[in-house]
Length: 114
Image (cartoon, rainbow, N blue to C red):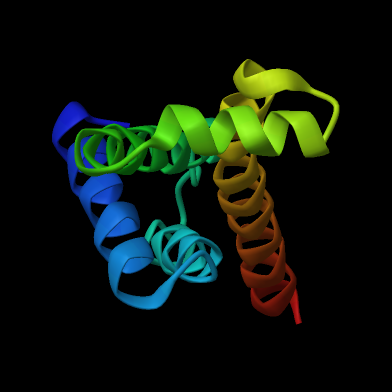
């Protein structure tokens, strides 16, 4: 994926998350995969873009509030520690976006065969 497209997708993921919540991630990823018709959807790039968008949002939120304290508390509840919470926070959108991209491309190919 070209760097410009990667930046655009990352911005779309972040904007979607801010405006509509976490469920915007698979919606944007599905739309991106459908727009990449005939070519490879670059599932890994889509997943990386989603994780990066949430990392950027997490960084912005860290400037505005006690993200470290929240991670500490959640790390105590879920036995993965504060670093694990941050890792899970970034893994979640990556898995959502990557999966949505793969499924959308497979559905598109199946539709073209019939």
